[in-house]
Amino acid sequence: MTQRELPPLVIDYTGQRLAGVDEVGRGPLVGAVVAAAVILDPARPIAGLNDSKALSAKRRQSLDDEIRERALAFAVAEASPAEVDELNIYHATHLAMRRAIDALSPAAEYLLVDGNRLPGHSLPGQAVVKGDARHPAIAAASILAKVARDAQMLALDGRHPDYGFARHKGYPTREHLAALERLGPLPEHRRSFAPVKRQLALF
Figure (tube, rainbow, N blue to C red):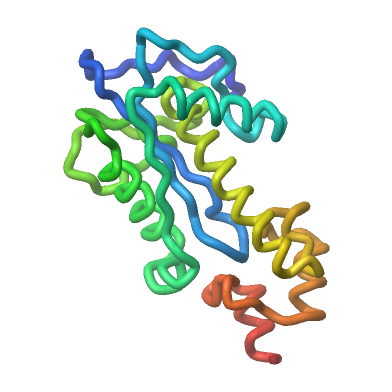
């Protein structure tokens, strides 16, 4: 199904404090999984909100600044690599989402969460498949999460430039796997992920 064929999004909520929720970083071998929650201000719309993966890094940064300036509330939270290893990536993702939701001030009343599952929060809401392309609040959350996680990867690249984190952002690219094999895992690597686990057995 293409984006144009997605069914219209019907939202069972008519108030003002609807929070879009999304995450970035389920697939990488290193670093935190980062989630964001955003309550947009209907009186201060933001043009150009879209799935963060469909935007250039420069455009994401510009929109990140605009979201932080104009939103009624926003929050970015994470689950650490150790929590990913302890809980598994699915549960760690939902933990990061719940932390972001709980950090909103004013608090949300209703959640729109990207994906096919709600994160187990007490607030009512609905899961929206391809939500970052279907609702601006989810798109805004995807942008904040992506910018925050990319910044973490740039910082990690500054400390460990031989791994190429600035380029692949921790995903299991050929470059990353080769560096992992050559240099071994860092403390920030996710021990439970198979390529890291294999290398840990050798070092």
